[in-house]
Image (cartoon, rainbow, N blue to C red; front, top):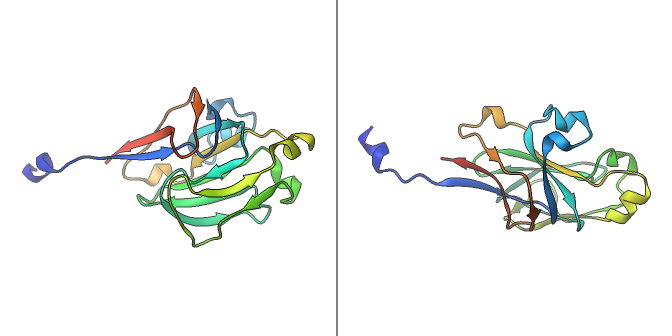
Length: 162
């Protein structure tokens, strides 16, 4: 117990994956996200289509339709970034992926680029949820911060005390 008193605590941080406005996950019109069926998180109303790594980690998933990427952070958080709603139906055309499964990435590193105008022309919502899919199993749960503008890889959107 005495050793714990002297151990330095540090904060685990997740940063915004895109430029835009940070909104609570509950405001996303898709119930899979708003009801947190996939996990807790935030969403971005993007003003730019570049998606960056919200933390240092390893790419664990790239959707075949390129609309979603999963990464595992150093603390084991499995983070899903899902660009737009119902964008799986676009069969990958508005997306350009810059990473592959197994790649190690650093905070702020570009993961994919989305053509937001093409997504909107197709009648899809560009809102981009970012959720921790295994949050209930983490030793240190994250608290999410919504509201205000975001700078990709710079604006803090979630923290956990370790």
